[in-house]
Amino acid sequence: MLLGRRSALGVLAGTGAWVIGCSESDGGGSSSAAPNPALCRGIEGGAFVRAVPFEGEGPAALDVATGAGLDGRLYDDLSTLEVGSPTTPTSRFYIRTRYPDRLDPNAPWRIRVHGLIEREVALTLEDLAPSSGPRGVHLLECSGNGGGAYFGMLSAAEWDGAPLLALLDAKTARTGAGTRVLVSGFDDHSQPSERSVPGASWIFTLADLEATGAFLATRMNGEPLPRDHGFPVRLVVPGWYGCTCIKWVNEISLVGDDAPSTAHMREFASRTMQSGTPGLARDFAPAEIDQTAMPVRVEEWRVGERRVFRIIGVAWGGKRPTSALGLRMNDDLPFERVAFCAPPTTNATWSWWAHTFVAPRPGLYTMRLRVEEAGIRTRRLDSGFYARSVLLASA
Ligand SMILES: Nc1nc2c(c(=O)[nH]1)N[C@H]1C(S)=C(S)[C@@H](COP(=O)(O)O)O[C@H]1N2
Ligand SMILES: [Mo]
Image (cartoon, rainbow, N blue to C red; front, side):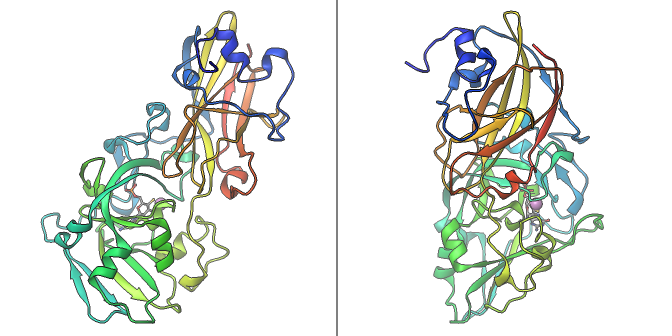
């Protein structure tokens, strides 16, 4: 069987062309790598030497919450996540904006629903309860993610919540002109922000809410939503950037086709790959996360007499699972297919992959990935956004 026990050399030979000193994979997408769960556990017959740090990233504290209000952050350390895990432990889930100090966690929560509906209503948490249930694992990524924080604004959790569109349909009667849904969250902080505009809100079409299955979340990884993640209720829009996942949701308004975009949408226009900064909500494209991938950990191993690197990474975003992922260890080297730890079956969270590499020369290597399957949009990946560099010694 393909994935059965093999010698260390056999495992390596199956994952790259270095053994014969020339490239078999021409990057044209012809070669395919079978899933390789063994390589995701380690290099059989090899000895782990050290983790190799990424060059030109940080500095940033990882896995600890820092700052307050709109500038409060927690960057998660993707390099120490358990390989293969679909979720991030809640205590390490990234935070972008911390619990507003002007909110009272003990006050009863109400969501004001108004606008182009027949009668304004206030939703309580009790109103959400009947339609709340497990919504599965979904990842969040901040559209402002980047190397300054080791790309640690990417996390995944298992959520419970109530689908938003069905809730609105059950609790309100829309007028014909009410075609879009504005979701806003509490965003009043006593600390002035150095980087962000206060006020978080996004406008969705009814079709967006339907297609994504957007839901009002009240639980995360089996526990009530932590304060910093939107307690008591936040929006989760599966497949869209985190800036659309409004926390501390306190207002929903039915608006029309002529609704202006919000200040929050405009703040995030370029980061969600809009063309320009549209003044109308209807000129915003869905803030979808395209299929992408990056290495999260590079390890040095000793295999017999050789120095071998193991690259571990994740692939996420997009709408249909693909395992056609090519990695180029540097711009002067060919793309080679990476092996997934398990065949990717969902785009709701990341999939793990691994690869081995023997460096032909010592020095800096800049790793880039590409999707080698037609019809999959990869704008941010192809822009070089997720390229990461390491200093490697030769064999
Ligand atoms: N009320 C409010 N909601 C918000 C924000 C905010 O600043 N205020 N930030 C948004 C952004 S930019 C991101 S990436 C996500 C982050 O959610 P998390 O902190 O739970 O990871 O929340 C979104 N919801
Ligand atoms: Mo964000």
